[in-house]
Structure formats: C-alpha cells, structure tokens
Length: 533
Image 1 (cartoon, rainbow, N blue to C red):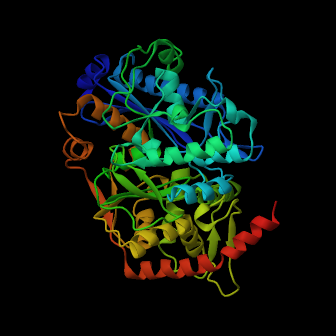
Image 2 (tube, helix red, strand yellow):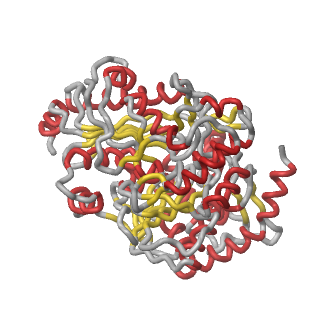
Image 3 (cartoon, rainbow, N blue to C red):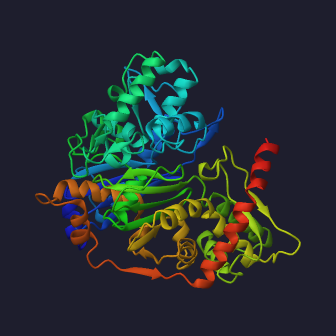
C-alpha cells in the first residue's frame, strides 16, 4: 500500500489494531488490509514485587495502555497527516494466566497476581491429582484454589475471575469473555466442545461445596469464544478509557482477547498440527501443535490450545533473558567508565556474537538465570548464579555462551519429554522474541537445544501485538468456513521470507554436555535459595 492508500484506509476504518501487554512493554500495532504494519506505539513498564507477590497496579495498566495508544495515534498523524478516529477491528492480548478476582460491583478484591508467582504449589499438586491433568502454578484455577485453601477472606465475594487480557476487554466492551487459547490457561478445555471441561468443572464444584464456597465455578469464569467470533464492541466509556482525548469513535468491533501464547502462534503461522514456535524474552515457552494427545500426564508439560481450539503441548519456563540483560547492563556500565559511547543494541549484538566463538559446551562454566521460581526444576524462588571450577575456561566467549545456554536450560528439560518420551514430530519451529534479535545467534543456540532446524521470519519482530491484530483482521475478513490456518497461510504469510539455521552436531553435543552439568548443579541453586533471603 502506498501513502495515499494507507491514508484512505485509516480514514475509512479499513484497519485492525492489536495491543499486547507484555511483561516489560505494552505494544500497539495498526495494520492495513494487506496485514502489514502501518504504525506502532509502545510503553515500557515493569512488574513490582510487593508483599511477596509479583504484580502490576491497575493504574499502571491503564496509564500504560493509554500511553501506547497515544504514541500510535501520534505516529499515524505524523506519517499520514490524518487523525486516528475509526478502526475496523481491535484485539487485546496479554501475558497468560494469573489471578484477577472481582466482586459484583467490579472491584478488584486483591492485587493482580501475575503468572510469575510461584505461590500455589499446594493447589497445583492437588488439582493435578484431582483432574489427572497438569495444572501449573501460574494457572488461574491454581491461584483460585490456593486462595480457598489459604482461607482468604475475599473468596466468598468473587463474582468474576479473569486474566489481564480479559480484564481490559471487559472494561472496554462490557463483555466477560476470553478467546479459547487464553481460556485454556485458566481451566482445562474440552477440545470436542471447545469449552471448559464439564467433568472437571463438576469435580471442582464438589471441592467448593466441601469448603462451603457460595458460588459455582462456571458462574465466575469468562465465556469462551473461538478465533473469528465477534466479542462485543467498544463502548462510549471504553473509547474514552482507551483514548482520553475523545478522538476515537465508539462502536468498533473487538475480537476475543487472547494470551501471548496464542498471539505468538498466530504471528509465526504456527497454528497447524506439526508446527511449533518458541517465544523467548523475559520468559520462554515452546508451543507444539499436536497430532494426537500425549500418552500420559507430565507435570512439566501444559496442555493448552491454539486460538482455533487445536490441542497444544506447551513447555513454559519463567526465566529467560532477564539475567542476560542484567549482565549486558554491567558491560554497558563498563563502557561508560571507559568513556566509550556504544548503542545498546550494538552492545547486545557484539556480546551475543562472542558466544559463537566459545567452546561447544561453554568451557565447563555454569549459570542459572532464575530471577523468579522455576516450576520445571521445582524451585519456588530464584537466585541468579554463575559458577565455575578452577579448571573451567573462563573467557568472555564462554561466559556469554553459557548464559545463552542457561536461558534455555529449564525449557530443554521439558522439550526432552516431548521429543524423546512422546516421540512428537514437528515440521518446523519458528522463533520470535528478544532472544532472536541478534541475527543467527539465538537461532543457533536454540537449534542446538532442540536439535531441529529453527526459522525466524522477517515479521518475527512484530510479535504478539501484530498477532492479535491479525486475529482482529481475521474476524473482519474471513471467508465462509475459512479456518484460521488457511487464512494465515494464504492471505498473511504467502511469500513470507525467513532464515533457517540447522543444528550442527558439535553444538548439539556441546549443549547436551552443558545440560548434564546444569542438572547436576541444581543442588547449588537450591542451596542458594535456602541460604540467601
């Protein structure tokens, strides 16, 4: 689309807007009918650790949303000389899971408990046993049941339970709904009915009765919608909440709110069976779309769905690049001391490229990147660590290589279950997120960890905000009986360019050697958690 065509599309509302609440950034992306990005806006934010809980305040949610939208609007005006008043469709996405319970008047009963909290171990274990279905600690139902087990006073007053994406959507439309992918991170989904699993709902309601809780679970959960379904329209109050300037028109249709896992699948065209994607940033998760169910329950594997309801095996690690970023910041401080000016992205690039010069196994070094707890390795809290022996080869290249390895250590443990124990087969894995920004480096490390080729699309940098914009566009433009997989393949990704890195055997063997050291050294991490308050 040329400049005039884009301007006309904006003026006529022939666009789709996607906004995603990531863990460190809220990003807004506006796309045209050709699905290409027209403009973007963003707002940086950080979670807070308050009273033992990782949280974001409601004030930060709304101020961040408004700031990202205002930045987008400014870019539209500057680039195309027209105000952003009409939009064809809008979609919201956010970090999955977590706990946001509201009373009948719409008041949040306790501060938002994010996915990052590992405080629901008792509930997670009991529900996994009750359902015979893995219920990770970060899932909404685990947070709810832990609050019940803890006899928290607010439980009796819950009238609505939702996620961050569901909360924002509700406040802007009045609709208490979720996309099926996001809903699958609250409570198990029945892929035959594309709704919450009725048998497990009944099992949970018996637990509620035993605890004398005055409501039933389905009464407080959001409704479940599929990709392509309409999920309400922007109310007048919602328009003012999103755009306090009053410029944005009400009545814009919204697609179902989705989680970052679902938008990552969409943004990488990984919604068909035998496809997979890895999103690697503050946290890291791999999503593998299955041909058939797993043979048994594995605590390390989550079962969720695509936005169109297909079963997905998800391996999720709470920690990925936070420790890497902290080390790069130390190197940046050193360049400041030297009086050397260097762009932050260039510094990342130089340090990441050093990792490719290291020994295949990282020279005997060891690191743990645990800023927070890690369920795959059964740690409730995190203590970032770097460890070496006197014989280790302590070089900058090995140091960087091992920290890149460590970012994928917990993920690798879960992936080995899928590939080795369940013999899951995939045709392609697509990577996206900050881990892959330096060309070729993250791909090469990920290929070594997974022992499969890893591709990165040219559009991978667009991320989840683009993915939810695509879901909004799909709702608007899908043909009769046109499935999401077909829409993405034929109308969005046809001719898409990508780069693929095939694993080198030397790197695969080196990563395996590192993992033996990583698993053996977990006792060090456990001791650090116990010893350092």
